Image: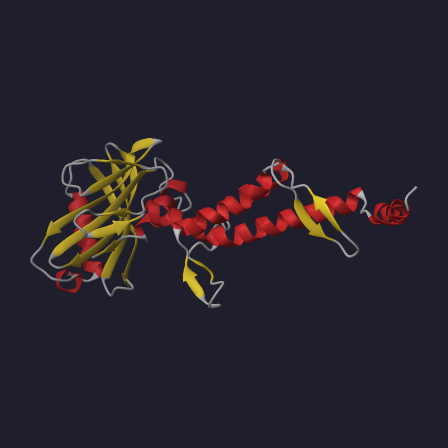
Length: 284
C-alpha cells in the first residue's frame, strides 16, 4: 500500500471519530434554521426600518428589501440545492438545509400578528363601535346591547327591546327659545311640568315621580334626570328621561319599560340597561 494512502487512513479515522452525532447534527441544523427565521421575523415585524449595513444607521425598508426578507425565510424550506457548509471546532462538514415543514412552521409564525389586544383594549373598541352618533352631530349615546334601531314619528332615533318592542329608548330634538335649562326652570319645576303633562293624557291614570337630579357633563353641559312611574290604560311603565338644552335646542333622551306589577323593582335588568344607556347620552 502506498505511503500516502497509509498516511490518509489515520486522518480518515480521526475525522470519522470527530463526526458529530445525530443529535448534534439536528441541533446545529435547528440553530441554522432558527437564525434565518429570527432575522426574517425581525424584518417582518419591523418593516419600516432596517439596519444600514454601511452607515450603521436606519433606512426605510423598500418593497424589494421586504421581499428579500420573505425569500430569506423561505429559502431554508428548500430541500434541493447546494449544501451549506457549517464549521465545527475540529473540522468542516456539509450540512443539508433544514426541514421544509420545520421552516414553514416558523415562517408562518413570522407572518402572525405581533400580539393580541388586551381585554381592556378590545372592550374599549367594542364600546366605541356600539355608540350611536347623530348624523347631524347633535348627540351621541350607547343604546342597550342587542336593541334594534327603529323609527318613530318625531324621534331623531329610536331603539327597541327585541324581547318586547314597547320597551324602547328614543331621542327627540326640538328648537326652543331659551338657551339653557336654567332659563327654562329648576329641576323641581321641570319635574312638576313633566308630571302635569303626563297626567293630561287620556290614557294616564296615575303619575308618580321616583327621583330627579341635575348634573353637569365633562363638557360643561347641564342635564336634568327624571325617573317616574305611570299607571295607564295600556299598562304600567317606568320612564327614565335625560334633558338638556344647547344652542336653543331641547334634547330629550327618554326610555320606557313596561314593568307590569314590578315597577318598584329598581334592579330590573331592562331598567338597568336603560339607565346605563342614558348615562352615556351627550350633546354637541
